[in-house]
Amino acid sequence: MASGRLLRRPAGERRARFTPFQFFGEVVGELKRVTWPSRPETTRLTILVIMVSIVIGIFLFAFDQVFNVLLDLLLQAGR
Image 1 (tube, rainbow, N blue to C red):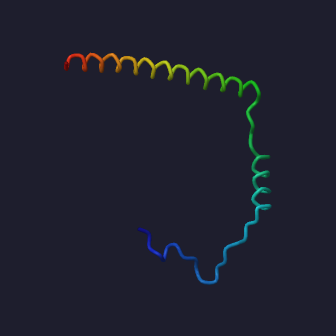
Image 2 (cartoon, one colour):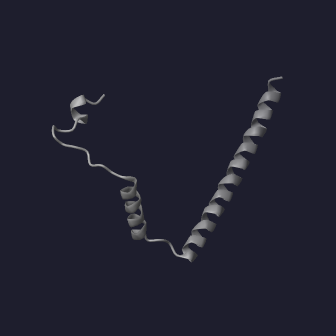
Image 3 (cartoon, rainbow, N blue to C red):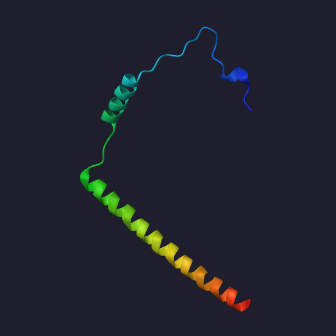
């Protein structure tokens, strides 16, 4: 647990006020500095994400089917 001394501000130091207008102004400023991907790059990466999701879905489906068969065999052997 942290010591109370580490969390306190030095005497006389005040916290600056931060208004919602300042916050949104800084958000807009940051968004102007972002390097946005091009349309072809966005399309390519979207297709890549969809393909990887499909492959992982197929893998998980196959894995589930194998475990389902193994569990059925195990339960039938126990009868």
